[in-house]
Image: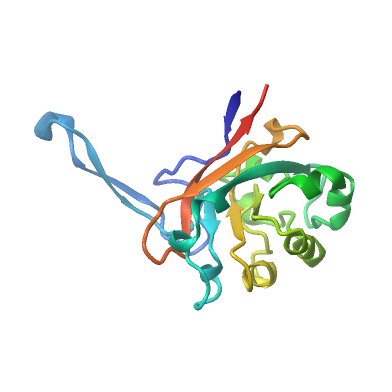
Length: 213
């Protein structure tokens, strides 16, 4: 068994969505004076590698703390989109090329390679994002969720795909993944466990892939 971490580290200088406050990691107790270390964490709910709940978009929809934990674990498959150029979209033909495996997966993770731009202005640029046809497939095949190594499943100026996938199901979205290029083209176990807090519209996750063999 091999475990691959797919999570960006939270720091005070990290990439955040434009307009979002940077995280604060303040040491409030230290070894020298208190005999132990404790850190006060302050961050937005969609910081770093994180999960969106349906409540992120719709006030009446489900929050993460009310979604059963089994929704956050399942068979994952990486869809290779790393050849896409700036401004190109993730289309259904990417799924059709690996349809048998995609149908078996509970999470589809789209590997664009955009995580190489993490920490730069280009990360917020013309990254690849999903078409509505892809979103329709995710819903019709009853996936648990979708993940990408970009800042959003939509463009920077739209929430159209968010609204489509979160409107009627407890589907989850994992954004700002990293390391998807290490996972190959076989099914694996995907885990993305969000911080459990009351009325959670979203939360940072520790996302991992568990590879057998």
